[in-house]
Length: 140
Image 1 (cartoon, rainbow, N blue to C red):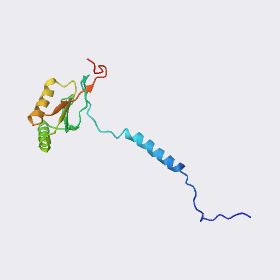
Image 2: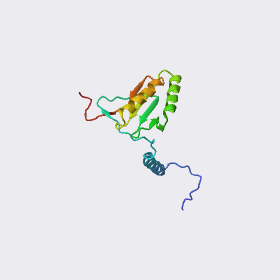
Image 3: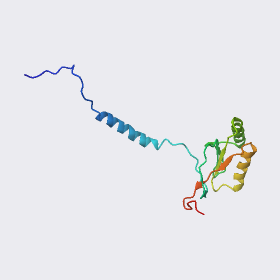
């Protein structure tokens, strides 16, 4: 006699192959799309120095691009708006800092003018952004 299967039997095993397949497909989709989800950046050619270091805890990041346009935290800004942002940062706390970066083709006077803007607005702690020169290796 043939045994008749009823629908009331307990499931004793779980097939995980579809779960693994779906997980791998989602992982691949994430890896492919992650390269497109990047923060828009400003193209500047930073000067190089052998003693470049990391700066931590910067509050305001200023960048001068090749055309001399001023950016504050990645957004274009006029000098008066930058001055107001600096004053607001100084008012929030005494540990406010600025990171100043400029394309190497920007005239020295423009960089000094930006430093003067930062200092005259009350921000005395700032750093100049540079890119570490791998050819020097930090040796003198």
